[in-house]
Length: 392
Image 1: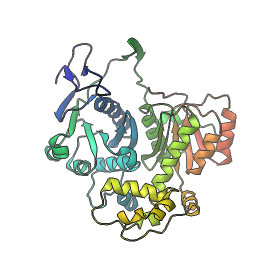
Image 2: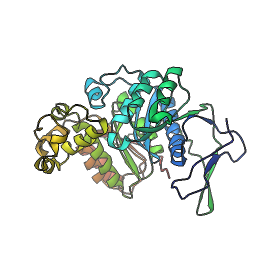
Image 3: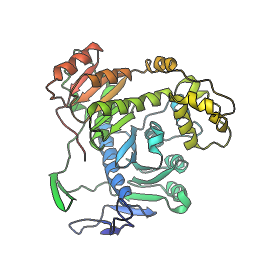
Image 4: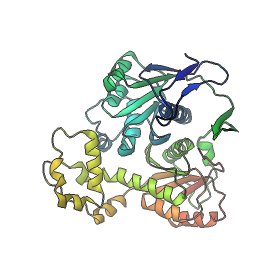
């Protein structure tokens, strides 16, 4: 392993020189097996690796995440996919290992945001997972290892230039970390807080019931938030993030953004969407974009412009606002995590519209009573974790 890696440039082409290295002169805990990862690639790689490493430790399941611009677009554990999810994630033609299931869910929940993602896997990448990755648009991957077949498959991406990084899973960073802003060095203790089901014991609502599936999903939400640019909120269901709202100045905007993503994820499972008849040869990204337009309120304008003829074999019947509202009203069992307290009950009102029944948040607002009362109105169960998870 090398002590430093020279990079083409930093965040932008004008930011040179650029490199990554260890301050103490030790060897880097990674090996570049293929490609030439850049500055932002490595920021995604190290943040995403921490997420899947901690999620694996908390759940004992294989885990994957899909990162874009130093925040997760999706994260998931390796539980089996339903036939519907296999279809909307375009993997119904593949035999999926548990690790491949984790990536299919992490990549599939918000396919628009995951386009050109950085991937992190908690376990050695197998051929099943590599086959799935090979047909999606992606910048690179970090994992503790790769089977010979998986490495061969991945090296075939991007004309042989796909970024493949192996990390030493035994590496432990120093307990104090530093970074510079405007020539000034910041120092803080590394956020090594362990997140597991023990954080969910202080249930402050009238409803005290948290099923094991909800505990798993809340732990998933909180670990995802730990590596999401703040402010942030995360909706989860069935072992996967279905909506991440990152980097918003207002908590309610996080809740709305993540909730809208969760709604789109669920609307993609509507029978009318599943029944769309695309023309042969339409690429997956174009299908994703077209499905999002079909779901949106702008679709009637698209119909009027005749654009549907480019993508569909026959003119699709619109999905009305009433049909969308009726469908979303059937979404239940969703969990919600927040990286800081909810200041008002309006966040709970918005979460309720997207099927949220279980919540984990730090608590500590002067309006906690209002937030709790709003949860009680909808018979939600909410735990106060007592910990904030800001990440910058």
